[in-house]
Length: 343
Ligand SMILES: *Cc1c(COP(=O)(O)O)cnc(C)c1O
Image 1 (cartoon, rainbow, N blue to C red):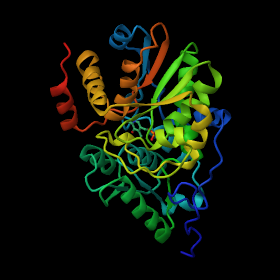
Image 2: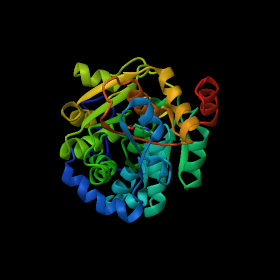
Image 3: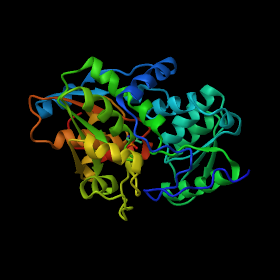
């Protein structure tokens, strides 16, 4: 190693290496990514939710990203990034830090393209997600109490090993890959009025802004848990400062440090950014299981909760992505025990 990958200064306090390009992707990049992604992944169904439509008075459609291999949308980004990985990293391998689904995405894509993968996860990461990464052939390193601790460890390893560090937000190729979901929505449901998107690092929301937000009249609305509002605050207060409160049980949206590249796109791209209370997330998860037998993570419970809490969507056509299904079994049981609906 000759020090080529020493960290450079980053606008968002997460380390960015020289190969981390902060140029925002465009709608054309999403269209290009689609050629790559469609060779490796199926399109996902867009299905009307009879329960949510009846309760809200809107036409609510669920974009079933849970039907992808890995059970979450992020694999679209992993495929697009690893498909175009520089030759020097194909043998040396890639590194990522993850609370679960980003790591699964990179692990799946690594197996698909024959690239060695190492994933750093927090010590108490979702056990099912960790087992799935290992099953895909990734090396998993457990480190620290939360995502950001695992991330800092992985960034040190990236300096030491020269492996390609795949950031979970500051990666144009990931964003363009993830945006392919929005292109599918545009084709199938161009009359969409509003899309509620869960936000963790912001990649999913960027994808929908570049597609649904850019080429239809729809409003893309970001949603976070009130218990972990780092990106909400970044959006409304125009700051990239880390946020001290991160207490959500939904690990897919548990971020403390806002990422510069996604936030740059979301500032202009989102029509609004809202928060939902933690108990509404549990209710949404339980409701979708009880009423429609859909298993979803707390992270996408945020989007469903936002639609359920909106008082102005009757008569609209609304899309909510089911961003992932890899919920810890105990969390699903706990949410169901609290739920007092009929199903
Ligand atoms: C990562 C994730 C999110 C949040 O997506 P970002 O692109 O990080 O904002 C939402 N839902 C699930 C299931 C996730 O894994």
